[in-house]
Length: 393
Ligand code: F3S
Image 1 (spheres, rainbow, N blue to C red):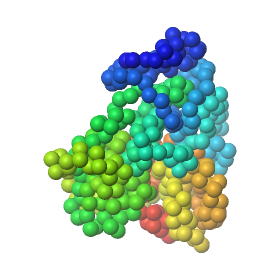
Image 2 (tube, rainbow, N blue to C red):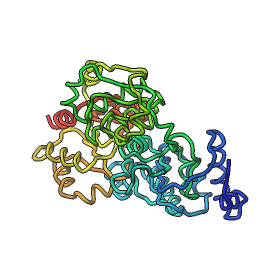
Image 3 (cartoon, protein in one colour):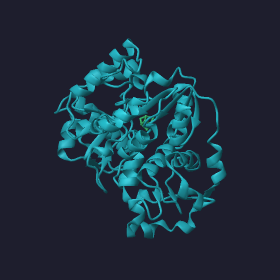
């Protein structure tokens, strides 16, 4: 790998032991994946922030680092709301450890904005190079915005934050962003009525087909919230870090990409609408959780409209970024008046709050994938309207 003089100096330990280790991580990663050089990144999103996922070994590693971020860097959701964790019935011991993790990140100069939707609050442009790590944020940045990031692990993202660079391989290289397969649904007309939950269900099925390949969808027209749901689910049931939607997502509209796509020669997978519908089973649930990924302003508004004047009879969790919640107190007030609780900084999967609930309804294809494996609960998939109906009837 070709390193410039300042990279070499960092690697030689001239800027301290932490930066030396970080440079070593980036260089090792670059060598494994055949990168020729390091490139600057405009922002970093660091995963591995919940005590539930990194535990004591992760905390200890963070506490031993000594450097400051040199580019804007922020966190993935943590295991509890930063301020009001008692309301979520988080155990005191867990909260203490979580706070120590936050303190460690603060010392490293990482912003304590804990969300999987940083693109609602950070300027991210088409063609920007990033080092992001939460899989749904990676998918959105690559696919919906047209920025360029690999799916970073926690340590490699943190190394990028402290160095300001990432090895140039994978999705940072334009030629690696061409689709490998085409995905269609057998009845495109049916998709005109679909909301985010149906797109999440499609993503759940498509991710299993795609694995870590780059799919291009044909004949569907999802808006941004539905793209968010589709991509998040594919990143969870498969390992899709980039997808395209013909005539919709930005790279699928650029002449260079259009020419390289030659979709007719690609393997085509057809997903039956009946298979999407079959995921919406009716089982009894003890609670409802929405906001995976964290809610957009439109999603918050829709939920407020649906819950306005109603009372929930089951525990109803709502997750969004702190910034989104602070900007929309009126909508949050309407939602909470129903008895639902809106939480910042955390989510139904990385917090321990849903682990003991037994069964949970969600409108997210990603949560539908992870609730059984990471929280040990039975999931039920429903539209946002069905989630409200089940919680209030
Ligand atoms: Fe975000 Fe948690 Fe879902 S991190 S994408 S809300 S699993």
